[in-house]
Image (cartoon, rainbow, N blue to C red):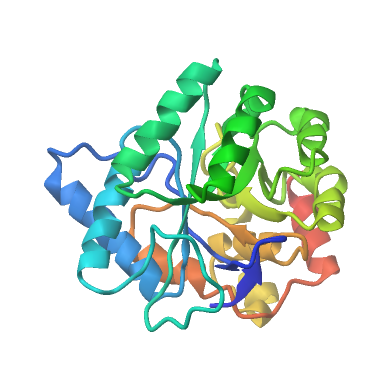
Length: 293
């Protein structure tokens, strides 16, 4: 696994990290399902993944992740939940947690934030993101104060709609944002023209949602590649359509990490092996983009 610096923070994040939308929403009564989540996270950690992304709106995802990380921490396998010290020598992986609040009012956002700390079982969250830019102007001062008090380490903004990029740029230019999370894949490349140049200029981290599966179009990208001759991409260490899609994403220099979600242990290895330093060339990227035009 290779690591990239998350913008102006001192954090080095795994190129392939772990999302949780739709995969870790497992109720407490489903012990088998919860044990599977712990197994997936364990496999991810063993493969070098060091960032897990979640959100208050992802059902019980935060609670499930909090339970799994607590178990792994008690086993002495990981560190998490304290401010990051780049000078501290570690003998176990340091896991970064990214979560989000999505609310119609500041009061509701503050309730969600309080709940995130509770269910994640921590007094410190690395990256707190304003999801879908909801009440971001009102919430930003609250998060800035929490950052000053070392309750959180960094502030981010997200949105799944490319049409919101002008507003996202407005938030980025406040100087208070440390990271952005946007869609980027072979069929959604607007971020490369509008968000990535500014993120590089401002030295912001970039997390990529939906690298394999477009929101509301599940399986669409994989289907486009299913009849493709994969020999062309073996030089990048890619032997499956999913690996090709991930390689496309992390080949952009502005990207910090992709956050594919999965509920399958075996998918972790398939996803993480694409972090091998062999970026996809422009000709092959354009070839892939032309498949979905």
